[in-house]
Image 1: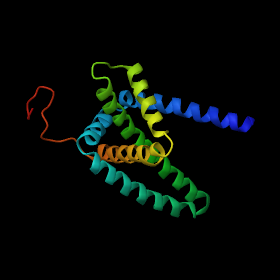
Image 2 (image 1 turned 180 degrees about the horizontal axis):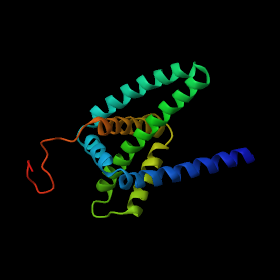
Image 3 (image 1 turned 90 degrees about the vertical axis):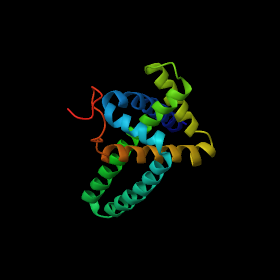
Image 4 (image 1 turned 45 degrees about the horizontal axis):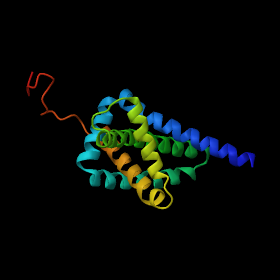
Length: 166
């Protein structure tokens, strides 16, 4: 009985910290999250496919490395942590997209936390959330994060003054 309570407390704490991370990342990595937000908003299908392909590829590579003993297990853990970190960037972008759709006139940490809690709760709905909402959000988040990290800034974009060239 005590073990079940401990697991429930750990899960609730994890959800709370995930919500805080989704709100904090746009402040820590504003450029990357903004690019991931553009990708997730403009081409979610492309982000989903890129996320799926990369998850399968790095999942197979990580599984192969786990067969390599301690050093291989460490490399597999690093691969897993990198996938989770990139997914977190994409999920924080999705959190901002949903926040602007649900609360178009409100901004701030409170609204961001409310939105993150709603996203997490949506992913926890039995069957539909577990098998549809959460995997789609995670794959779009991974794909958008990868595209945001790999894509270079456009050289034809106007600078702060609005001109194309210095």
